[in-house]
Amino acid sequence: MSNDASNFISSRKRKTALSFQKIKEILWYISECYTIFQLDEIIYSKKWCSINTSSKFEDYLKMEFVDNYLIKQKKLIQNKLSILEQINFSYETEKRFTDLDGIERLDKIDIYINNLGLQNIWKDSNEHVYFAIECKRINKLSDCKNYIGDIKKFCVRKYKQTRLPFEGMIAFLEKEKLSHQIVSENINLKLKDDTAINTTKYLEGLRVNSSFDGSYQSSHSKEYNKSEIFFIYHLLFDYSKSIIN
Figure 1: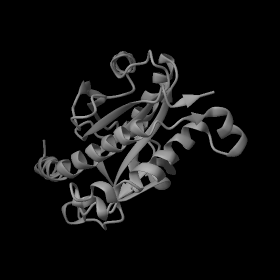
Figure 2 (figure 1 turned 180 degrees about the horizontal axis):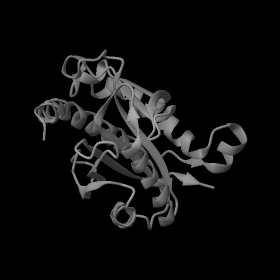
Figure 3 (figure 1 turned 120 degrees about the vertical axis):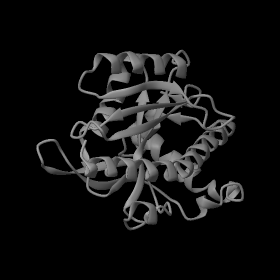
Figure 4 (figure 1 turned 90 degrees about the vertical axis):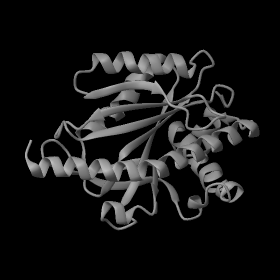
């Protein structure tokens, strides 16, 4: 390995380590918002959504979670996590990436989190340093194939701005029989069968909040640079009691 490559990897590891604590705090907060959501006992109707909105149901669930929890709940717990006061949560933000053919395209991000205060570490503007979360509904186990489709996108895309070497994924589990244990095991089975995804560590439980046990971590490498490892934090939310037809 050349000195330049070695220095790049060493520098990236330092930046990643310094950024990880802030990402952990954000993941704790997102999980805490989910526990508040459960206490609220909100019910979402697929029929109501189709009649009264132009949104896909998956997008509607995502927007409700961002607007009513990730944004609104900051004031309730900002004394515990003072960093939340400045952090921005939004949805369907578009950022640029380059595909494997070198073509620049637009990436619509489900949940976009920026203003993280990491600009000095990553030597980029505060607006351009961001953490992205993709969301998927899982109504049956075969939906896990679509879920790992987003993992593949993470592997093959080269982002134009400073997308942190952490990705987030939220699964809305719509059936009671689809526990987070069953779904995570199925995701791992599909990852093992998919040679197009460079997985360096399959989903393993990682507790990011003591009140939530459906969180996992996996790691993967980029297709265009196998030495560039990134981590995915999976939050598998039980929505089985919150969704009706």
